[in-house]
Image (tube, rainbow, N blue to C red):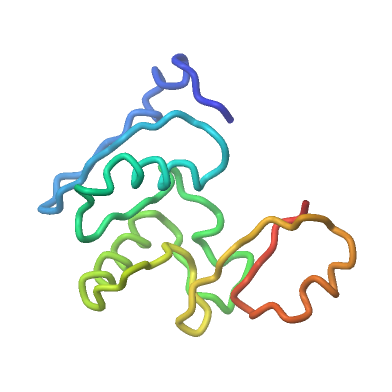
Length: 136
């Protein structure tokens, strides 16, 4: 849902950022568009000063992080569990890009929106098992 000032007054909308040796910055952005707006907005406005590692994560635990919809995948039951895994992985492997998503056989499961719900079998025929589609 779209956030307004009455939402921001609620305690659950004010983050409690834990004490850590990591440089954590909390940035509240306007709720515009879909999920991808925030990372692109932040990157485009901070490109020259981005940290070596920057993590984008929704404030609340999103169901796509868990593996309840795909039991064979490695999922995460909380944001903290996902961060504990991915921060270690990022520092160990120093990837250029690391999606914060469940994995299947070590590969991230990625999502796309369908253009239509017509001919689903035909649309999905050549998809890798790590691509999931939201219905149109």
